[in-house]
Length: 193
Image 1: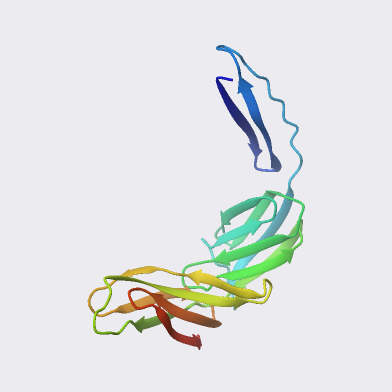
Image 2 (image 1 turned 60 degrees about the vertical axis):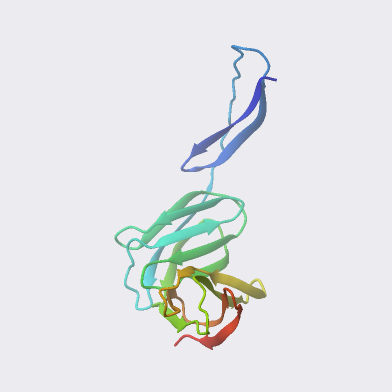
């Protein structure tokens, strides 16, 4: 073949349909690709703070065999219409709030409310005789659903000479914190208030 290609048909209410491995074997050859789209599953809800006030502009992600993310409207509302059939893993986040994860949410759920807690931050300082030029501060958190520690964030910091760092936007909970630099090791472990 001169080349092979694929086609993906997308619509905001239907599951995507793929046709791959189409071969062009001669100049001027054409292919007709017909796609029967299957109705997608849906999810509707809203994101609020812990007091029930809607959070506009929050990001919400929904994942099963298909994956999507949306931004909430002025009333904190979100809607997904082209999801797969399996249970969903969801996440929601917004500036000033901690990220929330939900698991095993049934497709076609309506009226779901995701409440985001106010976020905290971790600040600290790398100390030593020779401070590294750059260093990572990595936070992990135990995930009861997956039964293992998951890395939450690991930003790279440019050392300004003080060795200080600040990581905002963390949900309340216990975190393990360590630095990865010239002298790596566990710095601290603790709970956010």
